[in-house]
Image 1 (spheres, rainbow, N blue to C red):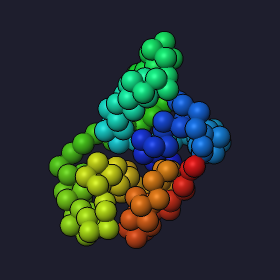
Image 2 (cartoon, rainbow, N blue to C red; image 1 turned 60 degrees about the vertical axis):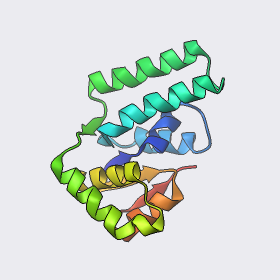
Image 3 (cartoon, rainbow, N blue to C red; image 1 turned 135 degrees about the vertical axis):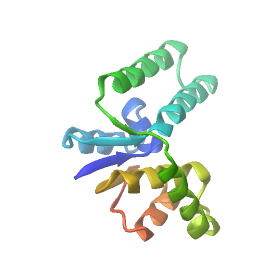
Image 4 (cartoon, one colour; image 1 turned 180 degrees about the vertical axis):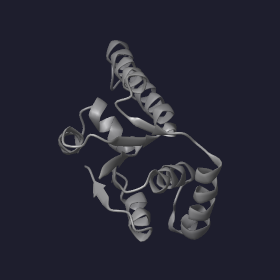
Length: 143
């Protein structure tokens, strides 16, 4: 079984915060780690935002971004590219769950997870986790 990480879970691998140890443990025992390609951009945004909030120094932020880029180049994470199928599935998810507070980018993560096949969905967002469970996905909340 693969692990699909959303941005909130992947950031816990880069930055120590509640749930980091659990995500590290899960990733250490799984060979197939999957993420939406969107998460790459969101991670860059999160790191730069934390730098701007002075929660990370420029040096640490740059090191984290280097680690992130190396993960992309090394292929240690299987990134699911945005596609028509994911867009269509995200639209259907927003139609079905938008009134529950499902946000657009979360719908893309969830659609990517569904398109990736049999994956456990690792995330820190309880609201997204609730929607994922309603879609039949096994959810692992971290943090």
